[in-house]
Image (cartoon, rainbow, N blue to C red; front, side):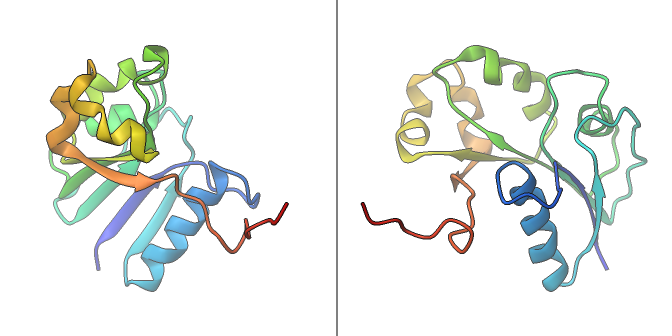
Length: 146
């Protein structure tokens, strides 16, 4: 069984980011993966294995678990999952040194941001980017009529 080391907030709240980490872990388990949750701000470095996946949200601090672990060779796959917009460079510029070590960047963003990546300072990320449309569970957030 493949182990997924999921580095993402994963508490009981229905708000993001906790809902994303919790729901993603549940989904991966239903599909046969062994999921190990790790706190986003943990400072350990995980030991890579060729049959394991590192999946998570990089913290801006370089000494945190996802960033330290992604620097180590030997993972089966390394996937970044985090919000994306190129309107505020402070929010994503630190990802440059992370994405170069990842197989894919699962970008949580709206259509407008994703469709304009090629015209942004982060166009070089586009080959690794997969659009994740805002990552909310519609069961927790039903349509509201006004």
